[in-house]
Length: 337
Image 1 (cartoon, rainbow, N blue to C red):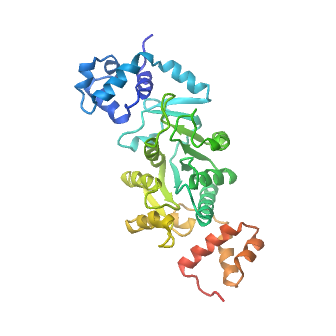
Image 2: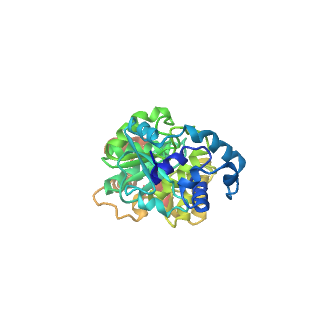
Image 3: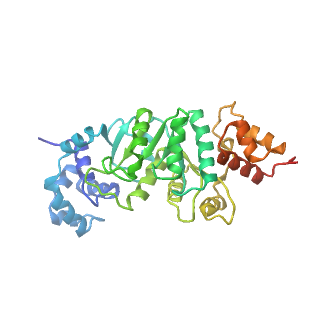
């Protein structure tokens, strides 16, 4: 049975070493993916950017690949495969210089870009509190929160969005079967009820460190701006902000103590021109009125109450109250007794 062009996309995406850029090179050289799929070794070696190792891998795996079986694999995991040729492919992902040619999607992708919330895998209690505060406001405003399902800030971004009744999109650095990290399987099932879990990695793709930088470009592509909550000098979250800048998107960063290694990345982003934000309103996304929790913390703090007393009075976690007070201190709040 003859394959369709979308099935050739699915098939090529299953070949290790052939991503979007090499796929573009093959299509340009041969004129069609059908011609590229049936090419000889010599013809393939003539394509710029396609080396002997990739050619050998392709020729070795080509006879074993069946796009119909791959689509069945996805269906068995309650997912669908969306290719760049399909109507359901997110238009905002096409902004990327090399869009992912194939997506595996569980749930429903939003039609409009969301806001990415990213940061370190090992956040402090202040970082967690800030992630929760900003994410809660975004979710209540109706913004879709996009993140990478990693431990740390990503987890709290997804979790807080769900707790707030919002929608969130998780972009994986693994395929749908080999979910990483595995302890987030329960979170994934909750996400897909109202949002989506997305991967570009086929059933044959192993989970390797190089997957995660690739994932970051999709996080940025699905967003209209990126908020970096807390990040060290080499945090992967900085890669997401780089992709956002390449797309001309807003990048926001929460500042922190200059001696804190978990704030080096965010402080550097601010020095490089990212927007410094100390409250959700600073994001400039027309936050909904009526959430007066931060002004209440401010008022009680001005009245001289201790952080524990404020937390009890407002029935909020101490860590969240401490995080808001730290932001108030950065802003130079006055009238403290």
